[in-house]
Image (tube, rainbow, N blue to C red):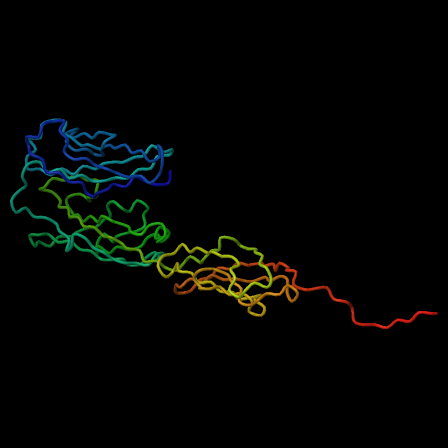
Length: 348
């Protein structure tokens, strides 16, 4: 059970009429867990639920409903923190946020907005800790200058990134999680909150008259770095071929795989040692097909031990090595011969 539940949105939002009946589903939260079996089963609960039980959540479906009439709460915005916990042992958990607006909001109410709703940025996998990813900023819509603090919401369950609370600069915290081969795309929900009477965090529930919240999405696209060499499927291959066969006779195919992507995973094969008389060739170079390059004669050489390398096309190039032992099979191509003429003498 090594994966935490991940909420599919951040935040979940709902605008409901004040006359909504108790028990009616206001919004449904969902979370996914990459594990299997019971380790992937998720149960939900509310954390720091405001108004002493005004809302409730179905632990199995994630459906949030009002436990009593919402009419007295018309015009208010509730922020509910939801805990998603899997059934593993020990369990893994993560928190999400739900915003429920009851009735109509105040006309022209001040909001906190980021310059963009979504930011996209590219970084190399394995970027070291401290690498700056992107700087985001939010402002009040009424133009009033006020200190804004930034924190990370969902998508950072493995603590790969940090954000500077004052500047909004997102940085790499733990590069071990930046593995292109494991995750092509990472999504972060960045939360900005104005400083109210308390030091507010995502778990705090605030009214519309209190601190303002704004949200944006940072999509981090990982760029592949050539950090995986080609690996042959076997450390040593063996094959046999008849002597006397025509040039271009197929011997065998060697194969190497590379866990990288694009050109970093494209492999070329070369024979670099043991190829006496240039007897063999790999053609085409990307195929791994080993063929004869001459007419072989077992009486001249009965065994070849070739060193084959697989080279990717990344920068820098990485290689893998294997050996290929080829035995030449004898063909009955030599007739018997008498020894040279000789003279002997015998006594009479």
